Image: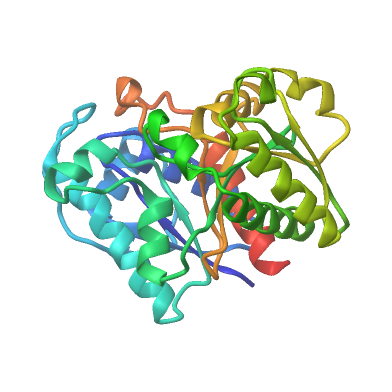
Length: 303
């Protein structure tokens, strides 16, 4: 049985609420869970939701003073402490995989400048080099060559080696998920593909050719605004930058999207949404994406 750790995320957001709602939904499923975060915040979320069921093991990170729906250093520090404790549990072999509730990069940055996200933080902690971010749902799958970078920096980050490495990781993820050979379409960086390119599309095309020589079924690069023509033909799309893939991923996910980090040496998933400060503390948050993230982590860890 996979042993999955779940961090509570930013306590000022919807993280604790969706974790409690997911626990209520999944408590009859054979999944071994460890919650990582403040016990008091977790029990407060139970009280808010008027639920009363035994909690799984909790790796407590201590008390937190915070206000809902606000970016604040105390909440950011609490979120980061949970991530650090999760890293410790992973390195000590206490858990096999990790599900992370949403955090505020701004809030964490108030106490630890330079934090750019779970993906980059975990890759640095485990020394794995470049990893792959995937936005996956039962309806469509998108992976990313670049992640949290200013758009003006993206062209310089597009190299044949980087695109090829991401294709190899994405193929490995999709094969693990589906248990069969898969097909990937690569999207171009520029409008109409090569029409406005300064050489990026040539680098992408060379990576596609190299992947095909390795035996991978890869197509493209296709203009990004035509991806929908290929959605029934392939198992996933490799996109060049964050919004190119994340916008269609969220539009098509129907609330069931999962963010996957692949290539860490362990499985990490998270809901495909943020802290939702606007509805925090109101009991209105939809736990569907968190439930999907936990089930995905369990499935991939056992595969």
